[in-house]
Length: 418
Image 1 (cartoon, rainbow, N blue to C red):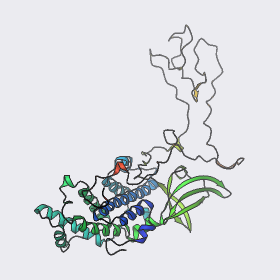
Image 2 (cartoon, helix red, strand yellow; image 1 turned 180 degrees about the vertical axis):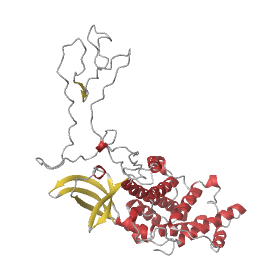
Image 3 (cartoon, one colour; image 1 turned 90 degrees about the vertical axis):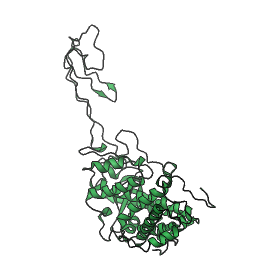
Image 4 (cartoon, rainbow, N blue to C red; image 1 turned 90 degrees about the horizontal axis):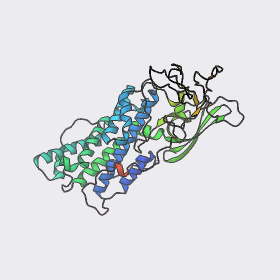
């Protein structure tokens, strides 16, 4: 781990998940303190969003049949989420599981003490005090503040401080935060960088981010001893093409083609741990309600008969025969059974000759088998459709810092500009 804010952390730059390492590489490439500070805020936002996505995936895996309304509501609003909303989603997802650890890992301490984060908090308090008394020398104020004792800052608490500091800088005009004061970025940028790198490189978070890669499901097929899921992702910055074998047919949530999944180590290989939703890219999780069934659990049924009320028009789709009146139409005439929009003509008027009892509407055809032609294996329903029936398509990938999420430009002037 670096001992100063400007030193390169090689693991963070090369091995961490792509959304985090690319932004950190951008930090390293910025030479002006103001540009570097702005990139650090982006890095913190993307890191918090990624952690929230992991926490939600962990929750959804454990509570898929027993969802928590508070968590589901927060996840459904990710398209308009702020940095604080992502922090809240992370916290309530873990609270719903009754634990602070992502994936239930207890090998390392999650809420570790952070030395550099403590220094950042001290500096922010010193700048806040200088602002209240009208002082303009940021360097002097921070130097004095770093000599004052403060409470210990731990990993979970650091993200609260980060969100508060980020909001002060981004909304500097509204909050009268002195980003225009001479030497502000020269003082605060190294402190912010050291704190962020420290928070991302604790033993616990490093294990989670390095050993649980994300991969996209390419195909699901039969094998001699079961089923094979083929996935494409990356592990520690290198391409990862792997096949996951299962003896039993995969569940619906495990077989969404082109969807992303979290992989977990399993006896020298990989296992599909849970579905992953790219919150930063605007991928909204499917809604879950208590007692609700998934699309794979629903069945196709013929429409139930609709009883006709007194004096109302018969509940049939075809018009009555010529000369027929409301009195000649049976009061309990059922609607014609339909299959794919075709009238099967099961509803008849009283003037027509008696017909043989109507046969039961044909049952829905089973899903197409994905095994080789001619196999007699059990049918596998590969869920690639949304609850609305339309084809699900993965959200197009785009940078985590998109135009709709970009914060207002900070007021600084450098050779690189804005």
